Image: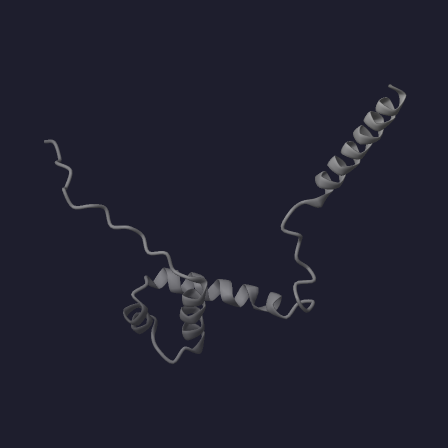
Length: 102
């Protein structure tokens, strides 16, 4: 028996902001409401709330570590960029000497 594809469009996944996730995780940490109440209030599955709560607890210490992001890596890896700068500098010097001789 073949199944027909439903004509109903696929339901798109919600994209939840970091602020919303933090709000839900903090509400779960307060423990003034049950997990079922939080699920109903925020319309999120209980396993997701539990995961966000776990992440919040694990990463809370990083909020106070080293001031304004002292441990953060730069957004771009600068080592290959410095190597490329050195390479281009050598090429420019070589070409400049070649032009002055010609």
